[in-house]
Each structure stands twice: as C-alpha cells, then as structure tokens.
Amino acid sequence: MSASPFAFFRGGAAIMATDLAGTASTMLRTQLCGDMHLANFGMYGAPDRTLVFDINDFDETLPGPFEWDVKRMAASFVVAG
Image 1 (cartoon, rainbow, N blue to C red):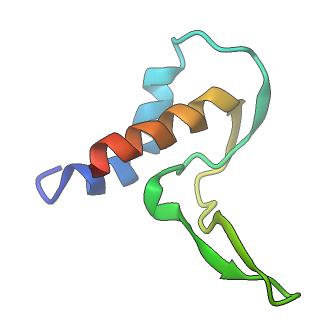
Image 2 (cartoon, rainbow, N blue to C red):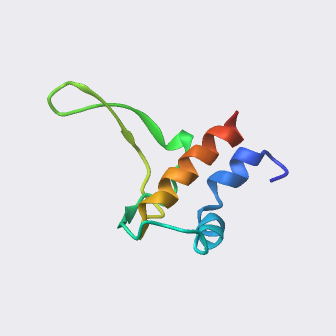
Image 3 (tube, rainbow, N blue to C red):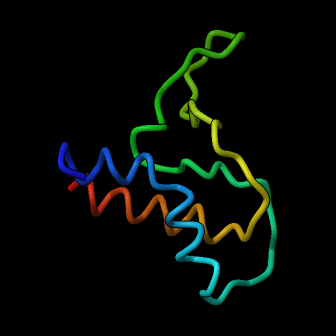
C-alpha cells in the first residue's frame, strides 16, 4: 500500500473475498474473475476484425456470488479515482 492504494487493491482479491464472505448475497453463484478491477479491462481485436471490450486477466478466478465481482469493480473505480 506504500506504493499506491490502487496497487494494493489490485493484489488484494483474497482479502476482499474474505471481507465479502460475511455480507448478504443473492446466492447466484458464478465463476468470478476474482481480480476484477479497472486495469483488467481493455479493447481487443476479435478474429473477425471487430473491436471488443473485455476482461484481459483471469489469474484469480473462483466460484462465488456474482455480487463480489460487481462490488470489487465499483470499489476499483473509487480507489483509482
């Protein structure tokens, strides 16, 4: 966290999962990105030569409530801002 709050946030998926485990959820389980933050999105060229906006990093994927990725993404906007 001494380098920057966002750098700490990017590496803190397990910490956030522990924090969110006790919160309410809809129990709709999906395969989460786990490392969901602003820096993991970008524009990419598809095989048919169209541009797509997508996630570029799935290194901490895990099953869990879909709200966790939504909350982590929202928090990344706040921390990055």
